[in-house]
Length: 541
Image (cartoon, rainbow, N blue to C red; front, side, top):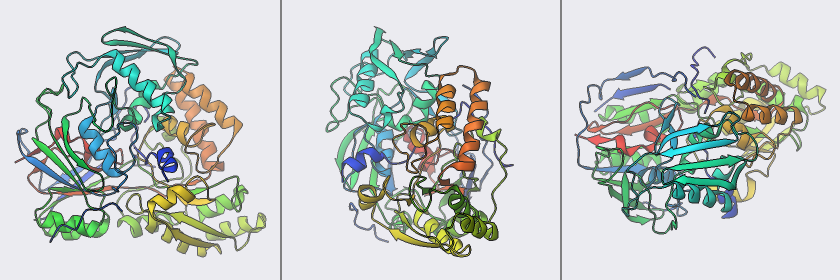
């Protein structure tokens, strides 16, 4: 697409679905415009993606100021909220985890890799050994220094606990890895893993570093804020960590994260002055908030909400049926209906900003109901019916499903939308039913492929399986040649486009709003709210 800008190295995301299953993821438009709070209950290197910003309320913010309490009206939580650094379940968990913990490396707002606790992360010539050097003087909330032993403990906890980040760590060989000194860790892999730092950054919310003996019931991290109190499904309070390694941050004295699961209640709370910021909004709230004098941010992202067709189940075993469903979609109309035109039209492939995706130059799919009907006739599936399962884990998902149902009928297909509560969806439908919705924040293409489409991917909701694709993936993650990796990525993307089980109609926007005295919220391509919840950068005036 013409508006794409490559970012590198190639890099949320989704909820941590494995644990959910066991228990049952730029531009920023900032617009300046001028209740009772509902009960809160459960229920490489490269170029950035550039930010075209219009800001009539938050320009010339000045220098950060210390002090103050930020009250966050956070959407997407439940009584399963957790502070476990490696078991993020809900959107409010993302917000709280970012307050308490830090990763070795992260993606910044532009999608570039940015070192955090690590001073450097470097491979040997064959990328089967990586050396991690830590920053000096980093402390945990209990005053103990961060050491290489803590990092090795963290990796061991992730792998042995089978947390979602275990796939991010690739073929890490714990037994062969060793602590060199207090600040240096040598990690070894059973096969070359050239995207190790990229994978850590792409899934940084799942690779937070914790101390030896970590207890999630009494969470200790190196993050900008320490825990004061926490009630799952309701509220958390964190306070400034005075010995934070990235001084003079954080600027705030305290962050209160309050669960508010209804958007109308979020808006009312912001309007009545009971909270300072609200997140994950739909386009329906924009005009109201603008006219009330609040700042509304609409961030273009690489996040995606795919419509997922299992390639091993009827009626989607035949590629003609999958192609017909893709051709039934009027992407521009769908984006207008769901997000009032905000966001970007996509083309059924993920990893929007990855150079290998850019290089594919795939023809943009347009709605073609006549061709869709002809493909169904060819496959012997004329008038095909399917139930599309969905849940509102992110704004727009249910509405996207409804729009697809209407558009598919124009091609002679009958799509019945089945809406489920989030807990029921992940317990009964996710990874099980032939047709469903999903949600991912932005990551580089290869990082996502390892979790979604390659052999052994834990979140392969489409059951995609292609030996040629798997060989390309194995070669891509093991090569240290950036150009060759991009070429292999392009081949993989083409297979996705031609044979895969995803319909990716758009890259969704992230819509947040905040009071004019809140500063430090910047554009982000990642598809998470409030600048990826990096509260250490926020301040109040």
